[in-house]
Structure formats: structure tokens, C-alpha cells
Length: 201
Length: 255
Figure (cartoon, one colour):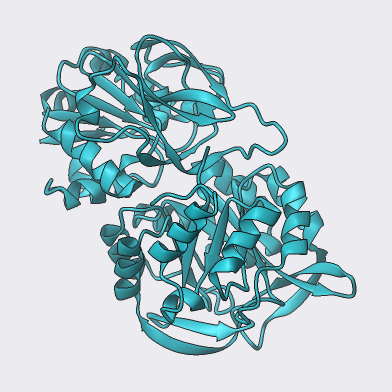
């Protein structure tokens, strides 16, 4: 059984739909949870998130999930905001986050000619050294769908980057914990391949 | 660099995909899911699903269609039509939409944009603007889904574009009504003026008739995406062919 951690946000259905297309049974009501026991016993844990870091962290704290998430040993995948809250801190609402990876999430600098949010399909560049199982079989420069205004910090956990203005982390990994800034559930075949890789871990 | 998006729009009325000319005289074209599947397979970057009569008829877009379409699609999916509260929006998002687009209700109550952005994040909130070139300026129209209720708001389009961004819109779709359904090309002058005022993504709508119109609008106005309906629905332009052509001319698109 997989678990989707309830980080708030209304549109977690597209994650459930994408998993459904890959053969994962279960409705949103069955998969979405804030129960630490359910999360701990899941085979794979999704940390999705749409909305603001402050709200998502407040919700996780209210359910006392911080320690639970930090202690997980099974594969964990943070998506979009769910990736950002893996880090120490976010400028979005100036909140402390899960501190699984170091550094601070910051706003994309708006400059003339650069639209924020970064919204649309963009290529990822896979770091040469990276051998991330999530990207197995996914060609370098593949397109994924992004929609975000904040970016994770650079650092040794970065597996792939993308560019909007400057380069920013698109995929991160620390041991069993993965994060993707884009939305694999809405990234066509490349996204499905990534989710399939994750589910096979 | 983020690629330019090609976005087919399904105008829906009474459960069927329809197409009108200049927002009027709607003709039934076919089944929603059939169209959604076709565009997904052709390489569309996003799908907009627009219940054209919902606002004018004072109701929310049908959730069943939203759910069925969302299950089918592995690309982003934006839903528009009669969303006039945070609760309406939550239901549509919960049914599987990724973004919600509001138009007439935002004109009735601009605070709605802020409320939606606070509840779901700006990236979820698209503001659609129906704009008509008249008397040497651009003007916002309301209730364009109804031949009876359609009216000018006497609000300047360029002012409204600035306002909606202040209120928290994460994307703007500018429907240039004078060009809509005519197939003579996008309103480049208006889109250029709008682009200059937008720090959020701007999507062009209204007027696509030939592949070169897409090339023009990306090259000359800098919009992030181009939305079209009729040329795709009638099969006059295949999205895969269009993207190949755009890529060959040096415009970054996902293929």
C-alpha cells in the first residue's frame, strides 16, 4: 500500500489519477492520510503539495508528522512544494521545514522578460555523476511540467537541474528521499516513467 | 528555457464540445473525452476545458466531465466556467483539475482572485479576459458565453491586466474577441501591449487559423502559450505537425 501525505491543497487528485494509470488501486480517500502509522507502514510515501509552504508545514506539524517523515526508511517522493519542504527552511512564509536536506528555499527573482510563476514544460539536465534510480531510462533534456514560484537551494543532493532565469534543482535525492520540482503526474510519458521507477524501488 | 505551450481549448456546452464564431452561434462538434484523448495523443501541452454557458447561467462547471477528463489526461488540465467561490474552486480541483480559470466572476468580485490565490496558491489561478478592440482602446467584456447577457464592462483591458496580477493571478489568458473564430491570426498589437504589462505567463487566444499564426504570435509578442480551438477541432492543424514546424523555425517546443 502506498501513502499520500495530506499536505493540504485541494488538487491531489491528479497524483491519484496518475498512479491509477500505472495500476495503483485506491481512491484519494483511501490513499491520502495524516496518520503516522499508516505512513510508516506504507511501501512508498508521496509528499505532494500545492499551495504555500507555511500552510503545508502547519498542517504537518498539527498532525505531528515531522519526526515520522524524517524517520522513514522506505522510498519517499516529494513533489513540487513537497520537494521544497524537504529542506531546512523556506522563504515562502519564512517557515522551518523538514530539514531532511540542507539550505533555504527562495523565491525566483522576477526580472523583466522572466515570468513568475515558472509555468510550463521545461527540459531537465541530468548531472553527469548522478545515478539516480528515479531517472533510469529517462533521457537527458527530457521535458517535464513545472509550475512554481520558489526554488530549492543548490547543493550536493541535486541530481538534475532546469533553467528559468538561472539554473535551479529539478530533482534531488538523499538516500531514500527524493524530490522533484516538476509534476510527474502531469508530465506525459516522461512523468509516468519517473513514477513507475519510483514505484519499482 | 521554458517551452512555448500549444493549448487546445474545449468549449463545452450541455456536455458537448462546441465552437462558435466571435463567441456566438455555437455549433456542436463532438464528445469531450474523444477530443481530450485526441489532443493528449497529439502532444498538446495543456488542455483547457471551458463550460461557456456556466457563468451566464449562474452554475458551476459539471464535475463529472472534469473527473472523467482528468483521469484520462497526463498533461495539465485547466477548467473554466462559473467558478465563483473558493468552495466551487475546491470542488473542481478535487475533481482533478490542476488550475482553475475565472473570468466573469472575477469581474463581479475581484477579491475572488485573492481568495483563490490565498487558498490554493497563485499558480492555480488563471484569469481569463475577453477583450474587444473598440474606439482606439481595448475593453473587457463579461458573460461572453451568452448571446443575451454579453456586455461591455467599460473596464480597460490593460488596466484589468495590471489589476488581476496585483490581486494574485498566476496566469492570464487574453481572448481577443475581434479575432476569435475568424482564423486571420492573433491580435499581435494587443498581445504585445498586454505582454509588456504581465510578469505572469500570458496566453494568447482568438484568431489562430494557420500554422504561421502561431509562429507569429510567439515571435512577435513573447506570449508563453497560444490557445486555439477551431483549427484543432476541425483537424485543419495537427498539433504534432505544428510543433515540428515551430521547432524547425527555432521556437522551443516540447515534442
